[in-house]
Length: 320
Image (cartoon, rainbow, N blue to C red; front, top):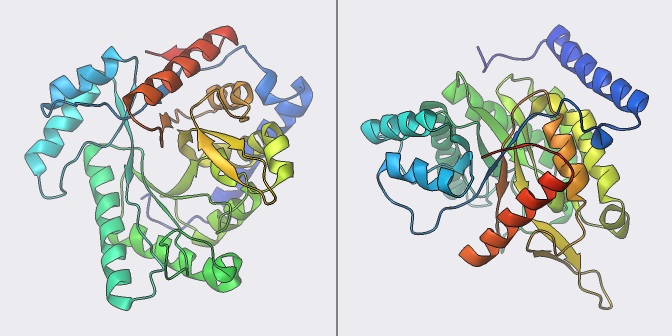
């Protein structure tokens, strides 16, 4: 059962798989430079003016070349609609990448924290019912003014222990059979690196706990900004067996007297998408790549075209 604890043998087996990936990468130079044997990538994004009919909605995604989607708006108790969406998307081979439940699981107000925990738990239940790859949220924040904001204790052992407990509670309450629960990595809260995510996987000890990868969220220093290709490779090498869904956006550096990294349209920033796409296509699993945080349909369209054009140039297949 996916909600069962990971025993030592299971973890070592996955770790061995990761070690195998590292060995292969070393032997061939790096996984990011391989072009042979790559699997087609599923790309997805929001569809604007989206039809409500599940069949038409799935076709709207395919018309844009998307083989992945964010979960359509539907409540957990809308059993018939969940079934219709699941069938229509499966029929047209559109994978539902994620159910996003963006709220603070470490909210300072006890009643609100309890409500947020239930919201995310219901999100994982919905993901499992509708066939989404995962339910994802950030781990939370102790910031009392901005729900996702920085706080000195967001990198503490107390924070780590609390997010381990929350992940276990959510997974154990749902006992999902196919969907995973993930924390999105952040630059100012755990997990904030590949190593801290590996430590978290070991601590949570649940098969249903997995990785949602967003490299842009890890850009929090000049070293990571300039060496983001190396950082991306490290994430795939150490977390590859657990990655179930990914985000796509780009980052630029607005030069001023303090560091100011800003999200921008794909292809106009400094994220090494050649490395990102090649590493993603080399994964043993099938993790969708979801474009996010663009400003309207035009920016999403530009980002989509950038991904498709670049994939063609570097010979990374895309499932359209």
